[in-house]
Image 1 (cartoon, rainbow, N blue to C red):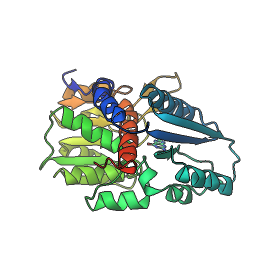
Image 2 (tube, rainbow, N blue to C red):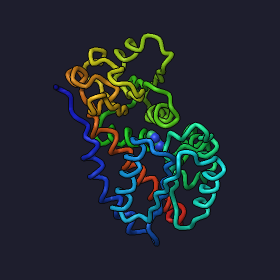
Image 3 (cartoon, rainbow, N blue to C red):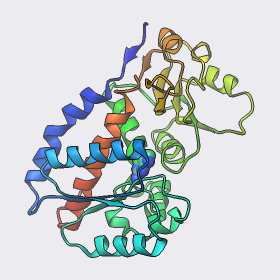
Image 4 (cartoon, rainbow, N blue to C red):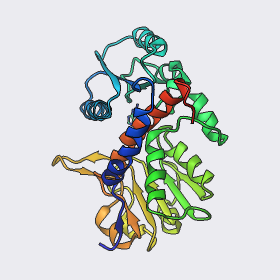
Amino acid sequence: MSARLLDGRDLARRLAPALRTRVAALPRPPGLAVVLVGEDPASAVYVERKHERAERLGFHQATIRLPVDTPQGALEALIDELNVDPRIDGVLVQLPLPSQIDAGAVLGRILPEKDVDGFHVVNTGRLSQGLAALVPCTPLGVMRLIADAGLPLAGCDALVVGRSNIVGRPMAMLLEQAHATVTLAHSRTRNLEDHVRRADLVVAAVGRPDHIRGAWIKPGAVVIDVGINRLADGSLVGDVEFGPAAARAGAITPVPGGVGPMTIAMLMENTVTAAERRQGLAR
Ligand code: GUN
């Protein structure tokens, strides 16, 4: 392997002291509410990690677990309560939601200033216009990893694979705002291989193991793997064929230990930002 490893665990750890300083400067601790509907095992693990991290940073924190058959009205009533709870600065509803729930309506009900996931159309719209917004945690974490490594973006050919509202779309917006030339590829894209071969930066957010072959990576390119896929043997792999990609890339994120820890770190940061704004310490 010749690529430099972009270590998200290490960066998340290095960001913690500055965050603790911001928490200490607040009149009251930042409050984060995490809502989990149902028992999806991967979601349960993510929610537990968010809970632990928030607790370690001294947040006021509530994890609310609801049964899988929770009706739309009950979930919306909970959001309404959290919206007016003065101790709560951030509200996160873990996705995916069960099929009876209209996720868009739930996410749209969270107050934009408490929307620490950055999924509300107000935050998405503000981000799209380059205005101050709560920015989705995973793409924000990717931008931090790239910046921390000192990798230049201006003028580079960036390829984002996957067009979800959680990762791909906001990722493309952030990269464009950093002056990259962005291509947003998706399941209907023809000749994905050709796009990957041209890219100086590849962000893979597809959710399929080995979807991006290592041999396609341009020598020296930066490879950011957002995928977290569990194989039949229990191991976790990303969307990029890691070994061969690392042999060609200039820098690459591991899975696990790359983007994942940064997502949680950015959720904590967004919660502190929301608390600062709500407590009059605007940034
Ligand atoms: N499910 C997968 N990623 C995310 C995320 O960033 N936020 C929420 N709420 N749910 C998710």
